[in-house]
Length: 307
Image (cartoon, rainbow, N blue to C red; front, side, top):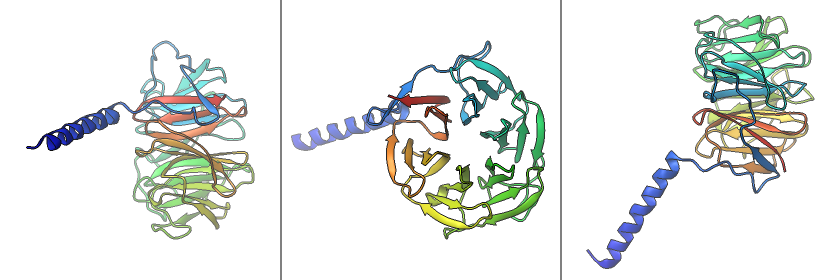
Protein backbone atom coordinates (compact mmCIF):
# COMPACT_ATOMS: atom_id res chain seq x y z
CA UNK A 1 0.00 0.00 0.00
CA UNK A 2 1.47 3.37 -0.94
CA UNK A 3 1.86 6.22 1.54
CA UNK A 4 -0.57 8.33 -0.51
CA UNK A 5 -3.20 5.56 -0.42
CA UNK A 6 -2.71 5.07 3.35
CA UNK A 7 -3.27 8.81 3.88
CA UNK A 8 -6.42 8.82 1.74
CA UNK A 9 -7.79 5.79 3.58
CA UNK A 10 -7.18 7.42 6.94
CA UNK A 11 -8.91 10.60 5.83
CA UNK A 12 -11.88 8.58 4.55
CA UNK A 13 -12.18 6.79 7.90
CA UNK A 14 -12.18 10.11 9.74
CA UNK A 15 -14.89 11.47 7.43
CA UNK A 16 -17.05 8.40 8.01
CA UNK A 17 -16.63 8.72 11.78
CA UNK A 18 -17.55 12.39 11.72
CA UNK A 19 -20.60 11.62 9.60
CA UNK A 20 -21.73 8.94 12.04
CA UNK A 21 -21.38 11.30 14.99
CA UNK A 22 -23.38 13.95 13.14
CA UNK A 23 -26.18 11.48 12.54
CA UNK A 24 -26.30 10.55 16.23
CA UNK A 25 -25.94 14.11 17.51
CA UNK A 26 -27.71 16.51 15.11
CA UNK A 27 -26.44 20.05 14.94
CA UNK A 28 -28.19 22.58 17.20
CA UNK A 29 -30.95 24.67 15.64
CA UNK A 30 -29.41 27.50 13.68
CA UNK A 31 -31.29 30.76 13.41
CA UNK A 32 -28.31 33.09 13.35
CA UNK A 33 -28.69 33.66 9.63
CA UNK A 34 -32.34 34.59 10.05
CA UNK A 35 -34.19 37.19 12.08
CA UNK A 36 -34.97 34.67 14.85
CA UNK A 37 -33.28 33.36 17.96
CA UNK A 38 -33.96 30.21 19.98
CA UNK A 39 -35.57 30.60 23.42
CA UNK A 40 -34.23 27.94 25.77
CA UNK A 41 -36.43 26.32 28.45
CA UNK A 42 -39.47 28.47 27.62
CA UNK A 43 -42.01 26.10 29.26
CA UNK A 44 -42.49 25.68 33.02
CA UNK A 45 -43.38 22.03 33.58
CA UNK A 46 -45.81 20.98 36.32
CA UNK A 47 -44.86 18.44 39.01
CA UNK A 48 -44.49 15.00 37.51
CA UNK A 49 -43.22 16.21 34.12
CA UNK A 50 -39.53 16.91 33.59
CA UNK A 51 -39.27 16.83 29.81
CA UNK A 52 -41.29 16.68 26.61
CA UNK A 53 -42.43 13.45 25.06
CA UNK A 54 -42.32 13.12 21.27
CA UNK A 55 -44.05 16.37 20.33
CA UNK A 56 -46.36 15.67 17.39
CA UNK A 57 -48.54 18.79 17.62
CA UNK A 58 -48.42 22.41 18.79
CA UNK A 59 -50.79 25.35 18.27
CA UNK A 60 -51.75 28.67 19.83
CA UNK A 61 -55.15 30.24 20.52
CA UNK A 62 -56.27 33.85 20.14
CA UNK A 63 -54.79 34.68 23.56
CA UNK A 64 -51.40 33.21 22.60
CA UNK A 65 -51.87 30.29 24.97
CA UNK A 66 -49.81 27.36 23.69
CA UNK A 67 -51.26 23.86 23.39
CA UNK A 68 -48.92 20.90 22.98
CA UNK A 69 -49.84 17.33 22.00
CA UNK A 70 -47.03 14.97 22.93
CA UNK A 71 -46.50 11.32 23.74
CA UNK A 72 -46.82 11.49 27.50
CA UNK A 73 -49.31 9.00 28.90
CA UNK A 74 -50.23 11.09 31.94
CA UNK A 75 -50.46 14.53 30.31
CA UNK A 76 -50.72 14.19 26.51
CA UNK A 77 -52.42 17.60 26.07
CA UNK A 78 -50.70 20.44 27.90
CA UNK A 79 -51.57 24.14 27.90
CA UNK A 80 -49.26 27.05 28.74
CA UNK A 81 -49.72 30.80 28.68
CA UNK A 82 -47.63 33.04 26.42
CA UNK A 83 -44.93 33.29 29.09
CA UNK A 84 -44.62 29.53 29.43
CA UNK A 85 -46.60 29.21 32.67
CA UNK A 86 -48.33 25.83 32.89
CA UNK A 87 -52.12 26.16 32.86
CA UNK A 88 -53.66 22.68 32.66
CA UNK A 89 -53.43 19.22 31.09
CA UNK A 90 -55.82 16.46 30.14
CA UNK A 91 -56.30 13.28 28.10
CA UNK A 92 -54.61 10.71 30.35
CA UNK A 93 -54.84 7.27 28.78
CA UNK A 94 -57.16 8.50 26.01
CA UNK A 95 -55.00 8.30 22.89
CA UNK A 96 -53.37 5.47 21.00
CA UNK A 97 -51.07 7.56 18.77
CA UNK A 98 -50.98 11.31 19.29
CA UNK A 99 -50.66 13.38 16.13
CA UNK A 100 -51.72 16.98 15.43
CA UNK A 101 -53.41 19.57 17.65
CA UNK A 102 -55.33 22.65 16.44
CA UNK A 103 -57.37 25.45 17.99
CA UNK A 104 -60.39 27.06 16.35
CA UNK A 105 -61.79 30.60 16.40
CA UNK A 106 -63.88 29.85 19.49
CA UNK A 107 -60.87 28.62 21.43
CA UNK A 108 -61.80 24.95 21.20
CA UNK A 109 -58.98 22.42 20.98
CA UNK A 110 -58.93 19.67 18.34
CA UNK A 111 -56.58 16.69 18.22
CA UNK A 112 -56.08 13.76 15.87
CA UNK A 113 -55.31 10.21 16.98
CA UNK A 114 -53.57 8.42 14.12
CA UNK A 115 -53.70 5.08 15.91
CA UNK A 116 -57.44 4.97 16.57
CA UNK A 117 -58.26 6.99 13.41
CA UNK A 118 -60.40 9.58 15.18
CA UNK A 119 -60.43 13.33 15.79
CA UNK A 120 -61.60 14.89 19.05
CA UNK A 121 -62.93 18.35 19.82
CA UNK A 122 -62.48 19.70 23.37
CA UNK A 123 -63.42 22.89 25.13
CA UNK A 124 -60.40 24.99 26.20
CA UNK A 125 -60.77 23.41 29.66
CA UNK A 126 -60.65 19.87 28.28
CA UNK A 127 -64.31 18.83 28.09
CA UNK A 128 -64.97 16.45 25.20
CA UNK A 129 -67.44 18.05 22.76
CA UNK A 130 -67.28 15.98 19.57
CA UNK A 131 -65.69 12.88 18.06
CA UNK A 132 -65.23 12.34 14.33
CA UNK A 133 -64.57 8.79 13.22
CA UNK A 134 -65.11 5.49 14.97
CA UNK A 135 -62.42 4.32 17.33
CA UNK A 136 -60.48 1.52 15.72
CA UNK A 137 -62.76 1.36 12.64
CA UNK A 138 -61.09 1.82 9.26
CA UNK A 139 -62.70 3.39 6.21
CA UNK A 140 -61.65 4.07 2.65
CA UNK A 141 -61.69 7.22 0.52
CA UNK A 142 -65.46 6.94 0.07
CA UNK A 143 -66.28 6.59 3.77
CA UNK A 144 -68.44 9.26 5.41
CA UNK A 145 -67.72 8.39 9.04
CA UNK A 146 -64.46 6.43 9.16
CA UNK A 147 -60.85 7.12 8.24
CA UNK A 148 -57.66 5.27 7.36
CA UNK A 149 -54.99 7.94 7.46
CA UNK A 150 -56.24 10.41 10.10
CA UNK A 151 -53.51 13.04 10.18
CA UNK A 152 -54.42 16.70 10.64
CA UNK A 153 -57.38 19.10 10.55
CA UNK A 154 -58.36 22.76 10.44
CA UNK A 155 -61.60 24.60 11.19
CA UNK A 156 -62.90 27.44 9.00
CA UNK A 157 -64.47 30.63 10.36
CA UNK A 158 -67.99 29.26 9.72
CA UNK A 159 -67.14 26.09 11.66
CA UNK A 160 -66.65 23.74 8.70
CA UNK A 161 -64.02 21.08 9.44
CA UNK A 162 -61.37 19.87 6.97
CA UNK A 163 -59.49 16.67 7.74
CA UNK A 164 -56.29 15.51 6.04
CA UNK A 165 -56.94 11.77 5.88
CA UNK A 166 -53.69 10.66 4.33
CA UNK A 167 -51.12 9.08 6.63
CA UNK A 168 -52.19 5.60 5.61
CA UNK A 169 -53.96 4.05 2.61
CA UNK A 170 -56.39 6.97 2.26
CA UNK A 171 -55.43 9.97 0.13
CA UNK A 172 -58.04 12.68 0.63
CA UNK A 173 -59.25 15.84 2.32
CA UNK A 174 -62.66 15.40 3.95
CA UNK A 175 -65.07 18.27 4.62
CA UNK A 176 -67.64 18.26 7.44
CA UNK A 177 -70.11 20.87 8.65
CA UNK A 178 -69.66 22.40 12.10
CA UNK A 179 -71.96 19.75 13.61
CA UNK A 180 -69.93 16.89 12.12
CA UNK A 181 -72.13 16.14 9.10
CA UNK A 182 -70.18 14.74 6.14
CA UNK A 183 -70.23 17.11 3.16
CA UNK A 184 -67.66 15.93 0.62
CA UNK A 185 -64.16 14.70 0.00
CA UNK A 186 -61.56 15.30 -2.71
CA UNK A 187 -58.21 13.92 -3.72
CA UNK A 188 -57.30 10.36 -4.59
CA UNK A 189 -53.89 8.80 -5.14
CA UNK A 190 -51.66 10.47 -7.70
CA UNK A 191 -49.31 13.32 -8.51
CA UNK A 192 -51.60 15.47 -10.62
CA UNK A 193 -53.23 18.71 -9.47
CA UNK A 194 -55.75 17.91 -6.73
CA UNK A 195 -54.40 14.39 -6.19
CA UNK A 196 -52.38 13.33 -3.16
CA UNK A 197 -49.68 10.98 -1.96
CA UNK A 198 -49.76 11.25 1.84
CA UNK A 199 -51.76 14.44 2.50
CA UNK A 200 -50.23 14.74 5.96
CA UNK A 201 -50.98 18.29 7.13
CA UNK A 202 -53.39 21.12 6.43
CA UNK A 203 -53.63 24.84 7.25
CA UNK A 204 -56.04 27.67 6.50
CA UNK A 205 -55.37 31.36 5.86
CA UNK A 206 -57.40 34.46 6.73
CA UNK A 207 -59.17 34.28 3.35
CA UNK A 208 -60.23 30.71 3.94
CA UNK A 209 -57.84 29.09 1.46
CA UNK A 210 -56.58 25.63 2.39
CA UNK A 211 -52.91 24.64 2.22
CA UNK A 212 -52.33 20.88 2.14
CA UNK A 213 -48.92 19.36 2.76
CA UNK A 214 -48.78 16.62 0.10
CA UNK A 215 -45.83 14.96 1.75
CA UNK A 216 -44.72 12.18 -0.57
CA UNK A 217 -45.25 14.44 -3.59
CA UNK A 218 -42.95 17.03 -1.96
CA UNK A 219 -45.35 19.91 -2.46
CA UNK A 220 -47.94 22.14 -0.82
CA UNK A 221 -51.22 22.37 -2.72
CA UNK A 222 -53.68 25.24 -2.28
CA UNK A 223 -57.47 24.83 -2.61
CA UNK A 224 -60.64 26.74 -1.97
CA UNK A 225 -63.10 25.22 0.49
CA UNK A 226 -64.95 23.36 -2.26
CA UNK A 227 -61.79 21.49 -3.19
CA UNK A 228 -60.93 23.48 -6.31
CA UNK A 229 -57.19 23.33 -6.99
CA UNK A 230 -55.65 26.80 -7.20
CA UNK A 231 -51.86 26.45 -7.14
CA UNK A 232 -48.97 24.48 -5.71
CA UNK A 233 -45.50 25.09 -4.29
CA UNK A 234 -42.75 22.56 -4.97
CA UNK A 235 -39.79 24.45 -3.49
CA UNK A 236 -40.49 23.92 0.23
CA UNK A 237 -38.93 20.53 0.81
CA UNK A 238 -41.05 17.68 2.15
CA UNK A 239 -43.95 19.22 4.10
CA UNK A 240 -44.48 17.51 7.45
CA UNK A 241 -46.34 20.46 8.97
CA UNK A 242 -47.83 23.66 7.54
CA UNK A 243 -49.18 26.87 9.03
CA UNK A 244 -50.26 30.23 7.62
CA UNK A 245 -50.04 33.53 9.49
CA UNK A 246 -50.83 36.77 7.68
CA UNK A 247 -49.14 36.61 4.29
CA UNK A 248 -46.54 34.04 5.34
CA UNK A 249 -46.51 30.28 4.91
CA UNK A 250 -44.54 28.21 7.42
CA UNK A 251 -43.48 24.68 6.41
CA UNK A 252 -41.42 22.23 8.47
CA UNK A 253 -39.52 19.50 6.67
CA UNK A 254 -39.08 16.49 8.96
CA UNK A 255 -36.79 14.51 6.66
CA UNK A 256 -33.00 14.64 6.91
CA UNK A 257 -33.31 18.29 5.88
CA UNK A 258 -34.89 19.03 9.31
CA UNK A 259 -35.65 22.69 8.74
CA UNK A 260 -38.34 25.36 8.70
CA UNK A 261 -39.14 27.31 5.56
CA UNK A 262 -40.79 30.73 5.88
CA UNK A 263 -42.25 31.72 2.53
CA UNK A 264 -44.79 34.09 1.04
CA UNK A 265 -48.24 32.52 0.96
CA UNK A 266 -48.93 34.16 -2.40
CA UNK A 267 -46.18 32.61 -4.48
CA UNK A 268 -44.12 30.39 -2.16
CA UNK A 269 -40.97 32.52 -2.37
CA UNK A 270 -38.68 31.53 0.49
CA UNK A 271 -37.96 34.44 2.83
CA UNK A 272 -36.06 32.67 5.58
CA UNK A 273 -34.93 29.22 6.64
CA UNK A 274 -34.17 27.84 10.09
CA UNK A 275 -31.97 24.75 9.99
CA UNK A 276 -30.60 22.27 12.51
CA UNK A 277 -33.97 21.02 13.75
CA UNK A 278 -34.63 17.35 14.54
CA UNK A 279 -37.56 15.67 12.78
CA UNK A 280 -39.91 18.68 13.07
CA UNK A 281 -43.53 17.78 12.37
CA UNK A 282 -45.64 20.73 13.54
CA UNK A 283 -45.36 24.51 13.50
CA UNK A 284 -47.45 27.43 14.72
CA UNK A 285 -47.01 31.20 15.17
CA UNK A 286 -48.51 33.50 17.81
CA UNK A 287 -49.72 37.10 17.49
CA UNK A 288 -46.27 38.49 18.32
CA UNK A 289 -44.55 36.40 15.67
CA UNK A 290 -43.07 33.80 18.03
CA UNK A 291 -42.66 30.43 16.30
CA UNK A 292 -43.24 27.09 18.05
CA UNK A 293 -42.02 23.85 16.47
CA UNK A 294 -42.83 20.34 17.65
CA UNK A 295 -40.09 17.74 17.17
CA UNK A 296 -40.79 14.02 17.31
CA UNK A 297 -37.49 12.13 17.53
CA UNK A 298 -35.84 14.89 19.56
CA UNK A 299 -38.93 15.03 21.83
CA UNK A 300 -38.91 18.81 22.08
CA UNK A 301 -40.98 21.93 21.49
CA UNK A 302 -38.70 24.71 20.31
CA UNK A 303 -39.61 28.40 20.49
CA UNK A 304 -38.08 31.05 18.26
CA UNK A 305 -38.60 34.80 18.62
CA UNK A 306 -37.51 37.71 16.50
CA UNK A 307 -34.09 39.13 17.34
